[in-house]
Image (cartoon, rainbow, N blue to C red; front, side):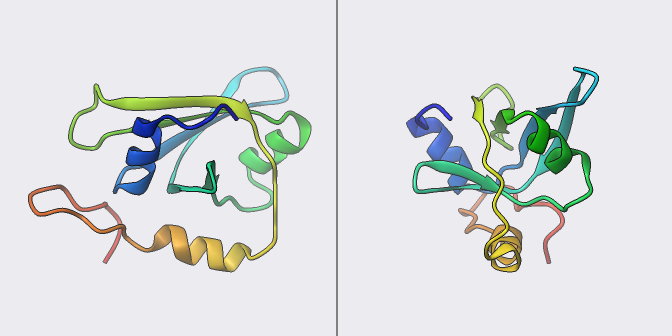
Length: 114
């Protein structure tokens, strides 16, 4: 993937969802809303074997990740590149991604979390 911009890093550190786009076998786009974070300059997210994302990425590593500011939809970062699938520490990654990020006073909490 291209180097992350300061805005991409900021959005990935906050309580924002990302939209991951991959390419289906027929060439059409496939998109999913995911929790994502930045780690060592890379975007990380979790997926489940057997679903469209990993199937598509095993065949074609082309990927786009769009992170949208939950407070201002006109503030976003789009990251294009190639993906790498890893299965090491998958359970720990799921736990990390599903843990709400700190929310500043007055900002909207991440939906779907207790």
